[in-house]
Length: 534
Image (cartoon, rainbow, N blue to C red; front, side, top):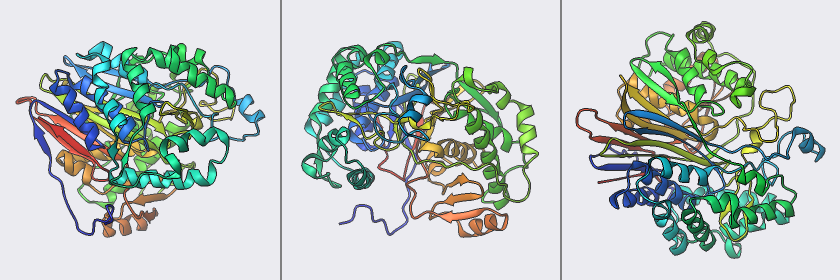
């Protein structure tokens, strides 16, 4: 039978619980988080357990060799963690161009930056967790050792990656990917079991050493050896020097609520900029082409400016404060007319990321996201470890005049963003939508669905989405109302209808009732999403 065939309309309902909730894109990962919570862990421990499990049960989107960000609500305060890694110290735009590249390559050893995921787990456990990291990683280790059956969307993207990699990854440095994810020259199908003993061993080392083995010990040595063997720039010295960074979250006030994101180098500011621009327009109307036109135009303007300016804060030619100011929003909203505009176009690459949310009965909540960037990332796997290395460096520019130009030790413009919502200083809850450059667009649509139209968390996620691509091109989901597509086309938008919802992001939401403490969760219908509760 075809596990991707769904000929009939279906709907999910909001999930409620009181003691705890974990929402992820994979049922086994959600269950891993709940298992740890039931063993005495809090929401932060549960998130670490789910995140580690996701490196095993959804390797098509994330891995140990990726980056992570988190927004953590503990004791009535929101904390931000930026665990994205910089470029290797020895790399430069000149060095990459000397290799014959006119722009940053997408795959191979060149776009590999320092991974931040293991450090994020250790730092979250140290600062806010109740259980040792070795304990929280046990469910993930079990999945890697014993194996698990592939879910439908996971199987779909695994097969697509294998088809592409088999055609394009013919040199020696990619062989470890095939050994790990296509053992014996065969990939697992939907419903078939897959295990990764090397992955299990790596997770054990990370847990037992609070991730130091990854940055200073045996794992770091293996990464360093493989990079040197294949002409990469990343070294054990780069790994040893890495530390995640606690940052002050940034926000935009939207109709009585505060929407929170991680500050640059992330693109979360794009969502806030778009919300600030859009709230200057007329009162939004449900299923209105005029409102959607104004939403799309607000997002275009925010994205055009975000791509031009966002990088590490010290390298930005304009401050984050100015881009989030009323003056900026007024100026940009005044430029929105009755027809589609054509800003300076740029190509939007696809993304591969996992987002999860967790909450417990004590009121702790976490919005967490991690990624290898584009699907399996760079295509480079460290032999025998299960570690797929990210290709985050692909977003650097080789243009010396661009704020995001590649430099050794610099962090690039980053796509992955966790979101959080508060009202009157109290937590509403975590939310997020993964998917490359769809992410701020997904955040924007989820927030407006929730606040403007009072949609419950599941409906806010289920609503058909639009996605600005470039210029006047807007991609819409197959279920997007045709009358709205036609009306947007009459306003000058070039509407393209996607064959499925795969590129429109995959999200999770948990809202908390401040009076009763009851948790209400929604999970993504576009993937194998699940919510585990008790």
